Amino acid sequence: MTRKLLVTIILVLLPLLLATDPARATKSYYAEYFDVQMELQDGGSAIVTETVKFHFEGDPFTFAFREISSRETDGITFLDASMDGVQMSPGTQPGQVEVEEGDPLKVTWHFSPTSESAHVFVVRYRANGVIRKGEGDTLVWRAIPEDHDYSIDRSTVALIYPAQASVLGQPTLDWNFDSAWEANRVILTATAIAADQDLILTAHFAPDSLTGVAPQWQIQKERAQAATSRALPVGLWTGIITLFLGGLGLFTYLRADRRDLNISPVTYTANPPSDVSPAVIGKLTKQQHSFMGAIFDLAQREALEVREEKGFWGTRNYMLVRTDRAVMLKPFERALMDVIFKSGETQVNMSEVGSRLAVQNNIFEDALEQELLQRGWLDPERLRKRTLLLKVALFALFLAIGVFLAVVLSGSGWSQNLDLAVLLGAVAGATLGVFILAIALLIFAGAYSVLTPSGEEQSARWKGFGEYLKQASKGREPAIRPDYFERYLAYAAVFGLGANWAKYFQNLGGVPLPGWFHALSGSHGDFGAMVAVMSSSDSSGAGAGAGAGASGGGSSGAG
Image 1 (cartoon, helix red, strand yellow):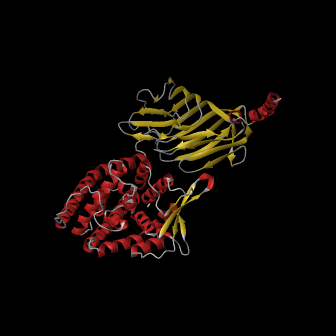
Image 2: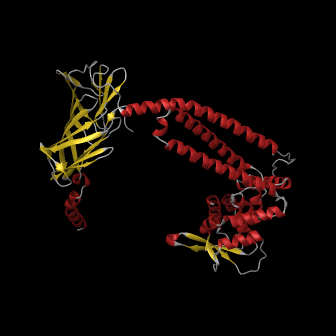
Image 3: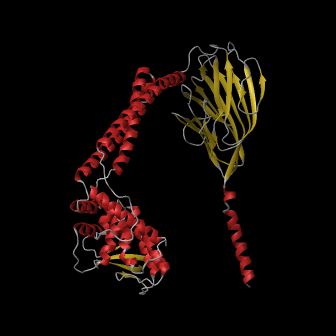
């Protein structure tokens, strides 16, 4: 019975599946031929006639189009278009042709829905300035556009030139082709042209046999090349001189600001150097996780708790809860609490802590900075210097970018004037030099120490303790007692080692969860939840072309 029911369902659904099969619902087309007749005119222009025969298959087609690029020409002018031998009037209705001027010139043939049929589309246009000057008169024309999503069985390119023009050698296509000659006409034929494969016609003529002057696009291109060749060396040397002088100035400043510190190297130590808040140590040693150290320190002092709750689809949420116990808070701790908890809130998801702090991080950081100043570990004069260096570096950076963009966007103005091109090249080189110097100054300012000698000494000692925590979290310190977990937890979080620290003690076993952490299971052995919380703490801290040199081209297709 079950088999009969299954067969019945298949028989019912099969026609529906076939009816909606994407392969059967698509449409396709190809070109039986794409013929181009190019009739060269006196003065360097050409009348181009393109004839394409499309075969349409599948769902109905309602239009065909041709986009004609004016690249390396002095402009393209539409003349007329037809379909199946019938001239078409301008418009967007079936039986009309839509013409959009510009670069590219877009021609769209509109027709009634048609399928399983073949139609012939013709467009005529004038291309000005197609003959480039050099040792002779040269035509390089993209007869088949580089962008077409259909194959072409055959293409016949007919080149007609004035009687007085003298052809030098065989005109060619960049494809396998056959050729035939007549009086002032050469016919080139290529076959089996794949989709998106262009076809470039090249023909050479005796000097001045087609035109006596170069086209405007070529003149402008040669001027731009000459301007570039003049401006580039000047810009290069200006950039080098700017870098040298700026680098010399920066080096001189570094020597003048140099101080001799008798600081012990970072030494490995298994004990905290002093009784200092983990958040302060994070600020002192330039860690990104200072606030997580403060959170866990506050939790150990019973100002905060962490509670595990069920989320959607079996997920777990870890809520940071503010207790009602009276705990003496330092200014930076009050600032942190005010940032984490909005007015009237008593709990927040730990996943939101990092984003909230990112918006108002300066409140917490400024309070920590004041703590360092009070301890004599922060040098206010060096802090002022670093602030000034950062401002100068950022100003120079944006100024260099702005000036360089202004030079680049000046466009053809500089290419028409060699003296102006040299001047702008020098300005561009200098701005690039300033840009590099600004980056170097930013790096230097970021590494510039604002600590006093005693602050440097304390920073080195605490970094040694941080190295101990790193090695311990990797299991390279065998004499680790279970009570070390909570004792050094806040410091491990400050140094971004929270997850590894918790995983190590999870593998060690027999380590109770802190009293301020409330797991769902209610079991002090559910250490996996603690690992998840520490992993969250670590992540929260880290979170704070076409072929060149041919005229014409464009695209072609139907739909």
